[in-house]
Image (cartoon, rainbow, N blue to C red; front, top):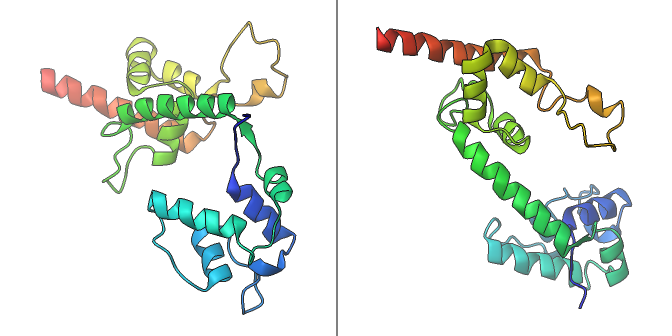
Length: 200
């Protein structure tokens, strides 16, 4: 058997953009592209959203219900089908990123504080680029502001990658935002000050 994975979100978005009649609400507007909204529109009922099993049951009912009236070919063609190998690779990347993200929590990213140096999204982006908090900390200790800003601002360097184009060289590893880079620098500067005062 050839087993593949599909993403229902692009499918629903495609149906809404093509004004698929079953997704039109009583007020004449089309429903939002989320599970709860589509379910409510089709069946005039709510379900226990954000419970994994209930989400799967609801999605199955949506996709294969007579009310939705779409065929299997449409589902396959518009769901951005991926192979098991591609999905395994995606899951490994997500696990890899999550492990590195955790190193930022309580340091550069403080979820329970109003003024965290970087946001949740930025911490994920840094982690997704392959960097952990200790990588940035070590760079700061060895090269200071230049090292930390350089690694976040400059594009990744891979001399063996012949596929990169000139436009790739203009994309930063993480961000070009002066505000975010400044927040990171201020954080490490404050760490240095606190270390000095603790040791003296």
